[in-house]
Image (cartoon, rainbow, N blue to C red; front, top):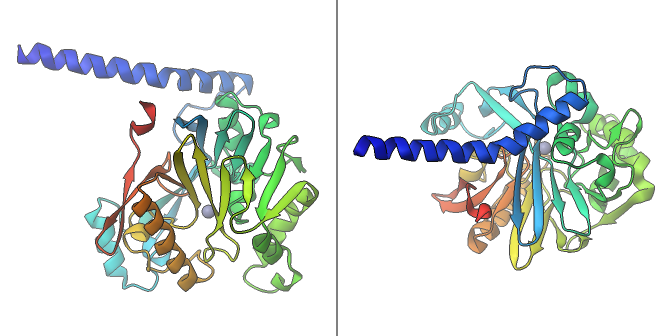
Length: 330
Ligand SMILES: [Zn+2]
């Protein structure tokens, strides 16, 4: 009796998983066939998607790819003894010598606009297995011309690389939204001969050609109906996050406010190599995740574990990342 009950339950769950996964797999296979792509279908080369609804907005999160980094303590918690960082990783069943960074651009389909937030690495990333956004959008049933707005949290390479394709705008029908402070910083000639010179050149190549179609915004400004921007500086001088609301439901797209789901959330004051102003980034991290934890709203963090959506619960002197599961499916 117990046994047959167990088998019945297993069969039910197996069937459920099959039904949920099938449309995505079919779409991916169709996209592969259309591209003449005969690569082995695995997680490293095929676009991964996650779709959910928030109010009447439909979200599609695309995994642009993942990269492996060495010595996590030299990126996250650089003001801490290495053993302290390594102990927290080990406690959370994570390796202490390597880490994986993933990239999660996403689309919000509001019914009147199709808004893409950040663009991944684009063509420059493809030899290394990133730059999967365009393939992912196609697999989700969007053509690149369907995108009506491209909004940028900030202008680092992993967020702007997908803007241009073969020297032309990848999203030919879109208008663009970027932070004024951010754009002015990276396009300023004063960046030449500084550590920001590489970023300066990348912005001149990938973002500046689109400036005529770009709206430059600041704190509280509207990106599109239902989406407003909040300044969240520190990671970069004009880094922005987006507050997204539909039918009384809300999600905050936090961009690169926190970039390791354990190290940076549990210890918001630990310094991060990629944060340009480390003290300001730490203060912003506390402020933003205080708001998210207090308001009990979901957030989408560009470098959180795919599909990059979850909640922040107050935990010790920081926050615990609680990944979304089926909350949005009911
Ligand atoms: Zn980033």
